[in-house]
Amino acid sequence: MAELTVYYESRVVGTIEVHAEGPSFTYAPQWLSMRGAFPLSLLMPLSPRRVSPRLFLPWAANLLPESTQLRAIGLQLGAAPEDVIGILAELGRDTAGALSIGKPGSTSTADWRPVPNAKALEKILEELPSKPFLVGEDGVSMSLAGVQTKLGVAIDDKGRICVPINGAPSTWILKPDSERLFGGVQNEALCLALAKRLGLNAPEVTTGKAGKRTYLMVRRYDRVEQAGRWRRLHQEDFCQALGKPPSAKYESNQTGIPGPTLAEMFAVTRNAMQAPDVVNLLDYVIFNVIACNTDAHAKNYSLMISGKGFRLAPIYDVMCGLAWEHVTRNMAQKIAGKNRGEHLKRRHWLRFAADVGLNGSRLVARVEALAKATLTETRNATADVAAMPAGAHPLMQQVTEAIEGRARALLSGLADTEAAEGELPNAPSKRSKGRKPPGAKAARTG
Image (cartoon, rainbow, N blue to C red; front, side, top):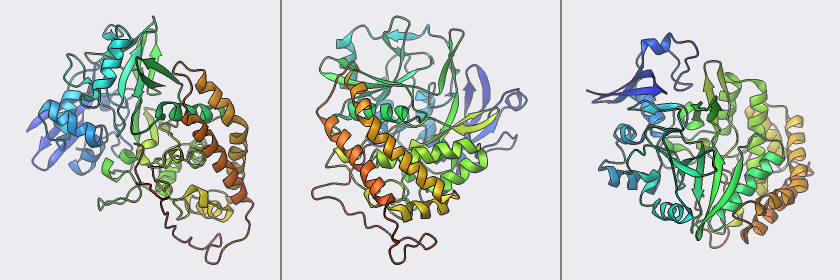
């Protein structure tokens, strides 16, 4: 039976044990007795009882990248993509959240390796698709979940981008441009800048250039500086909180495992967090509709975990899918049975309010307020992004127009007080067929 220790910085949190039936987890007695100790997950409360593979494996799998990135890592490490624990043993010293797997994590900046110049950074970005997270580089051991190519980095006191090694914490996430998502750097920067302008809890973002490449920088909200040390804050995404594997992150999928619904996510938020978190989650959902972010699946919402309890994490990974013809128009999660944002009328928002246990008139008022604020602030957010180091991009006009167009469509839909047959507020809503526009391939952004 193989064993792997899980740490919070230098403290032992527990042990992963790999059995024939899969990996399980057990909290260390000293962790259970420690003041300020926090659980790994909402589904794994602090207890001396062993966490079964049925609960632990989906949670652990959500720490890993997905799709082609995971396959590339497997090739580099000589491990099967399905070997979740084997890969985490190699890459798990700096994960999403607070935990380090296999070896202790550091809080020091001494092991930040500066990237010497723009040319060196450009080379790193060029190699990332075949070498995710610089896997195989001496001392580099990090894992970030998701489909998009990205890299955990830090910025030192001289303003240099650094690669953390030997378990040092990353403090920013760098996302390079992509041929598949032309203008994606400015797209995501604009959406998150707009979210912040609307008063949502959104991370700081900026952009940069390295030779012919551009990139987005997103400040990690699960890292905080204290007296010159970078401390890790724990988090998990809603797939982890609901016990779903990453392959089931979409509400509609072909895995045989139902994906998380918004109703389930609101129930978790209401039961485990405070009332302001329910309001914030509602704002995130509405904003994702306004921003035409069709990839707002359960892994793109998270909760923060501490010894004091749970709270909703900031909004992240928002991109306007309507700006690209090849990206699906169907939302990752349905609202009142509808999977197309442009189809949402007042009656659908009222039905959604009933589905998630919220006051209908207040929810409708919030949709109206955010849509009107969007029409006021989108051009300002566009200017914010144009002033960032990577500058403007031709796609930004399409993003701006798509977001403003969606805000107007939602306001028009709210004015539609006539309920269609079979779609009265208290009746089950009809299912949207969500047809793709001509030539669309129903891709996802990440």
